[in-house]
Length: 520
Length: 110
Image (cartoon, rainbow over the protein chains, first blue to last red):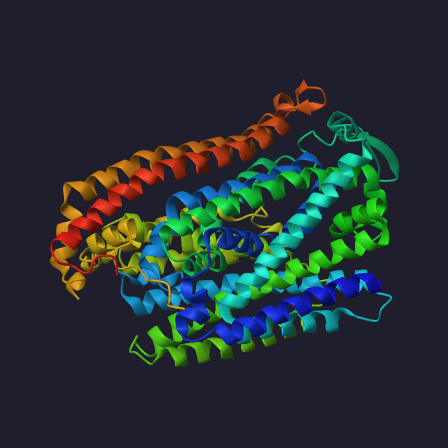
């Protein structure tokens, strides 16, 4: 396993060099929070893809397909289609009218303090849940991969946490962006290589590959069975399977455009047109990646086999074990290192989104009423927050331990983004009548209903005791978020937000008055 | 800054050029959003409620369900491509609105 450690250390060295370079270049708030708004379209496209493709995508979906065939692949589809919501509806007005955080666009014409306080709460919730899921995953992965080298769960979790603190505290958004870019290139390279090896295993015959996928052999309850893995229904079964799938789709399609760590990426480019270009780049990369999950997942099912994976580390080890079967120890080490890099980059992106929101939204605008306290204080508070968030995440991940059931936390993050953040963002851009009460109600009701439904659902209570039968709450919590927004807006009768609607419309659609990139 | 005088925003928002921009954008974004939502949610609905139909093999071992899932990727890329093309026209229209602001002695693109 020393090869794996070596490759991982090479990645860490490279990213620390990037951080040192970024720290030297960085000065002022726009530099720390938005990389000076000088990131180019393709760079930001790669960074968005890097922020988005987490370990859940790389290890999780490969495993889902390896074990459940078609149903796992269907999971892949929503992750790309979701970017159409980002492209068509959110990215450009956000870049035109905002500054550093998701809440900027809400505070534009609504009362800033209540809206920013709620938006900051939603951002911190989404980021922390998502981060803990990633950290526990990282720790569990390391203890599996490196069990001979003496690096245990606690060391791995602390290491990941410490590195993400260093990237964010010293390098800010510039370092975080380049860590994402390096990771995205590594992940795409590794996935492409693995896909080519899978097809090569079938003598480069796609039809031979799919013939094998149609006849996968494994053991079910002690009995050997043969199964067509292209058939739907292996995972999502009646009575609630179809509803759960639709609910998951809703969380992805409407949640991606409400993920704070994705949204703040659009502040790092010079203008809305570049933001648009970067979404298209991200869609090309993310789409290519998820199409290749066909080869990763079905490859693991046919070449390695479910039985072997189940005995050697479980479902999340499908991709690394496939690499081992096809390319030996060195390739196994490389793919494992790519998985670490993936986790590390994602947690860094989450950390900067949480600390920007706490500092810019909560500290400057809620506690200090938006009075100008100087950009240095905002950056200082953000650095301190990043440190605190990192330490808390390390402690929580260690307390929860490697066996904790954390997969539902990612689902929860998407559900909150779709049910709380997205209604508030979309209605504030498009509905003139929308007001402060509506935004606070959407954020509050979306957040609360997502959490409550997950707590009542099968992920937490187990399938037998579940009060709410679906794993994914979106189908109920998203309408609740929108309904709360509309009802609270109409009931409150406050029309002061209509005054600035024309201004937001003109700015959002033309870029007049938008934040400019900083000078060199 | 003259930009922050409310009447200037109201004036720009009321110009026919800006209204045209909004109508043109909505003319693309609304149908495109409806289309991709219907197309995307057709997948879990068909797979969830009509599994026999979706399992029908149409091309070697490939069934309707798999081909439909693959087509979603193509659909997303095509809409992104069409939007990028349409957006060039929106950009020109937006520039026209910005120029009108310049013409009355504003600061233009800040």
